[in-house]
Image (cartoon, rainbow, N blue to C red; front, side):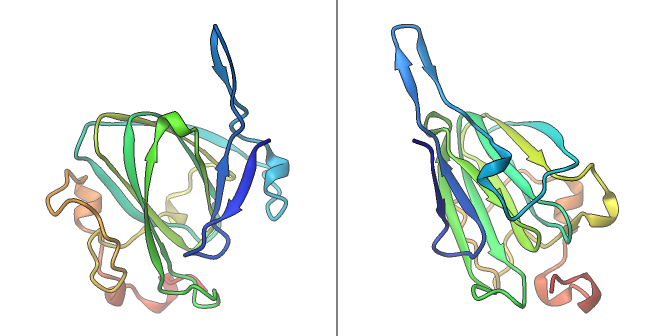
Length: 179
């Protein structure tokens, strides 16, 4: 049976451990079911695929409205999460998860939780969001912010121009901080 477990370090983040069915042909698992996340309606959806070379770090990004649900299809990555929600019991906490595609692990990331990933090898990440892309709801914090303290295994990742310009958490204006 697929197990949905809370992430101990950050409130409202859910880790989905799928049940695999295997035989001589291969294996199968269910990767997403909107009923697993009753806290969200999942009315509008968009599914995205991201392919990254080894050493790429994307993030840290956060949204006010959008939920992300990630599943790694190939490779191994680190997922960095930091709780930016002032009203959360885990505000200011961060965690680094090592994810291997073989596990089939799914990660539910609620609004206000900064998220990013570092590809340890070439990867393919599939992610479902519950809203269509809206640049007004796309925010960022520098990947190596000392206050957020995500313990990445790299100090020289490959970053996009946009992610290089993300501010430190202390420089984010109050109106761009999650409640």
